[in-house]
Image 1 (tube, rainbow, N blue to C red):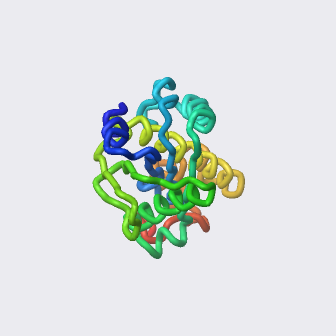
Image 2 (image 1 turned 90 degrees about the horizontal axis):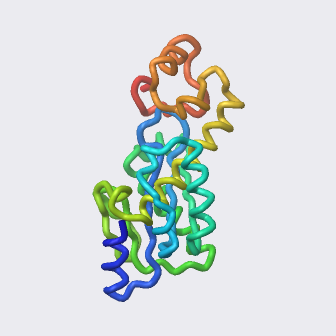
Image 3 (image 1 turned 90 degrees about the vertical axis):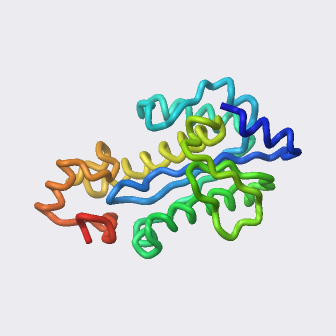
Length: 199
């Protein structure tokens, strides 16, 4: 889980950032990205792919990541902007904001390890896109867990505002019950109008 980090360290990079996002597939709510600064202490946590973890396990790991990483940045692209940008550009924008929020904390990223096949445009920092990076890089795995935990908490808050859609359970994903509710009462203000079946 640290081969990419080890290679970057061997090449002289000291501040290594892992980046991942959550929220590409839902039809409601924001896209959230996290940028986590690598520390060898992350290797001791036993991190794995966030999608394979229970919510309670992700919460516990997220707490440990904040304790064991030198710094964590989060970037959010809200629903209206997702609709205006499209999901691909919104995802990259959330990642860029996560990195910028690290920089606001005084971190100077030297290299970015990014989950997926795409680099973040308009960033001069060296970048390594890694397909399935959350299962190959401990720092990307950490970012995946933080991004998913933050987004889940946002959707729980939205559930209190719009309880009919059961966002606490479905997190905005198009489950059968979610689609049935949409058919019966229509969309909420946080539904993505550019996504099927809403468009």
